[in-house]
Length: 259
Image (cartoon, rainbow, N blue to C red; front, side):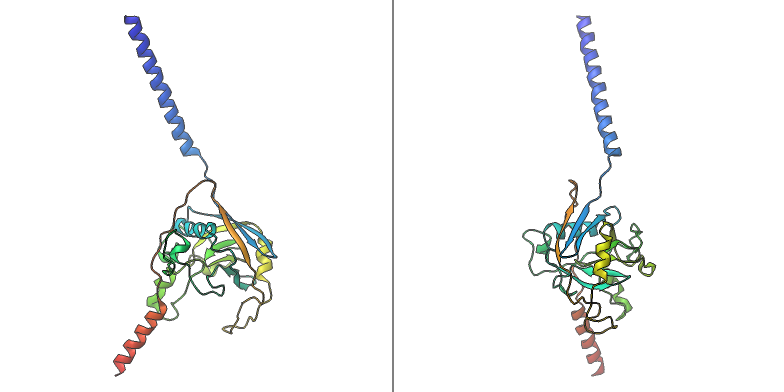
């Protein structure tokens, strides 16, 4: 009987050791597993393919927003509406001309088709220290509004105004480091970026109608992101700043004070 009890005890001990071993190995795998960054494939009609590695570690919400829009087909048929040699190419606007914004329905099933949204800017000037990506050639970043030339009090509103528009750098530009949410880099197709940056435009004249607007806007056939099985979730959104309403309020205040 004692021998039987010893055998049972030995079996229990062995089982415990094996169990601990499996748990330890699983924990080790979790610690050492390399998660591959998502890769966006941008197909541009008559130009070719641009592949961009995205960086969720430095701009998680920005990446989540881009992935969600891309994989739901939002960018299909959009254009690069602004192209500047030795600077950048910009696209992804709702209306194809730098105007318009995505709605909640563009990122969520059953979401509002009229309610637009924005996301907070994940960059240093906006008190987000995790994103140290420099604005160098090949970097993709979110475009945003800049209201600081109207009033310094609106600086933060501009920082937190990104929605769907993005740009890809065609040259290094240290002057805008930390002012925009860079969230990835081109790993294939820089020649395509260069070709788009140098298309014929309506005019290069500063502040003129059609400045930096391509005569024939390069069309984005599709953007799809391979996430390698990782779910980056839906982006956290904020209510976009309504510049028109603010302007009307200022006008009303000024008019009242003059009466």
